[in-house]
Length: 145
Image (tube, rainbow, N blue to C red):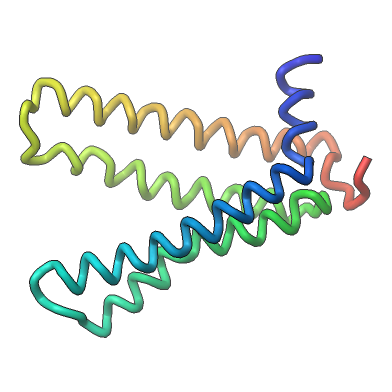
């Protein structure tokens, strides 16, 4: 069994759907509470515009929850959901290098942060390619094998 065949088997399993569902709920709670807590306890107090950022931070969690329903059913919309998740990860990658600003020792932190950003980029591109590969192969026919 090749690595690609094994990945296909894992992608459509019920355990993957359960894991995506759990990750969606966890990410959703963390993102909303994190944005609201950082804004509220950051010194300025609660601001109504924080709710907009909380909703934006909740979008990847909604994508994970939608993917947990469409992936086991082998619906073609799963490819678009995966690509949307990759898009959010690209936004995260874009902001990753700014994390190292002001943290000492710079000689250690900066290469570590750029290594993490490069790893995130490779994983996001691999996930996007894998979704496209499954679509081109016809795995999203809507009928489980």
